[in-house]
Length: 461
Image 1 (cartoon, rainbow, N blue to C red):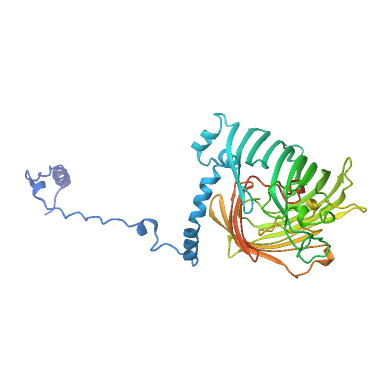
Image 2: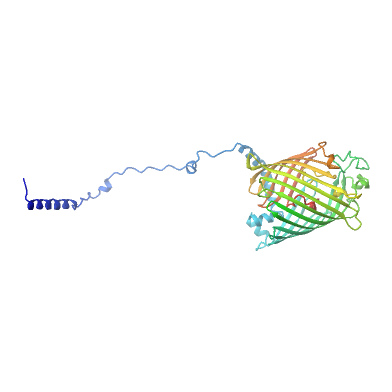
């Protein structure tokens, strides 16, 4: 059927209107309640998330040495408990309380509100000595710091000391210090001179080999200047005046010095010695941190001159060095540290060196009871962290004294080995506890306080 133009236009209009009507026809709503009758699929029940799924680990990593470290931590628990209790009773705790914010409540108890002044009880103990109990006052107002300490261990065992320090940062980081000290020490022992005093012909015993007991009174004034021209280099200059008087104790438990030795074997005893000693020391230390467990190399050396004043004819020279390495062992947080320390003293002219000034071995962690003109101590330490401010160590020391450098050998070398740990801040070591054993017996060391650096003969015992 053919449509004319008018018919085709009418047909097209009809189709358009019918399509629009279909598009606008409303959708029939579902019956009421159909939504409630509609069955939805049940929601899945979530299962608990385990710690392994949370952190992405199937099982925590374990190290091969964990059983050994766990056993060591259990064995060290009594020592840690003792240190925790005693450490708060020392003057060294002041640096930790102020700089590291350890135990803030204790800091509030010992310090004034502004933190400029603090007072602490002190306790010092070492094998063969009486405990010394006292108090320390600390004042710190940057750049000035001062401390005063007094301790009492008996009528003939007391100490009083004071120190002042002024720091500066221009033109180089540096410090100027002045200090004074008085102390009395009873029960000091002198075995004689040499590595084997019993057979050394330089010792003149009255009734056969014996240990001479004596007491000593000391007064000392020290002034020092230290600068750090380079990050790893320190230069230290110091001078001191030391007065000593050694005699026999009133009620000794062993033969006295005069009963054990002839007078020629104990020069400097029974009269006052007055000695001015001046020293120059140089230290190069590549460790990032001078405390705790860190890697690097250390080289130190010093040279000094001692002169008697007034009627004291003493005149001598001192020199020494130390070389130490701090090497990573297995990993960087465990350090193997070999070290050697050599000290020497030589009389100038025909002068005789007082027996108290002869070279000892303070770095030997056994009994420091050998004296001579030259000393050498070799050590090997293995160190690791127990906590942020506590580092443990296993060590072994070998020590020898002799009349000269050329006579140093491996005959009759003394040794001591043991375990200990160090307390430190982020900048310096402040305490040591160690137990060492060897052929001469066991030795316990407990010391707190910022130690003087090596090469500082001014603070020798």
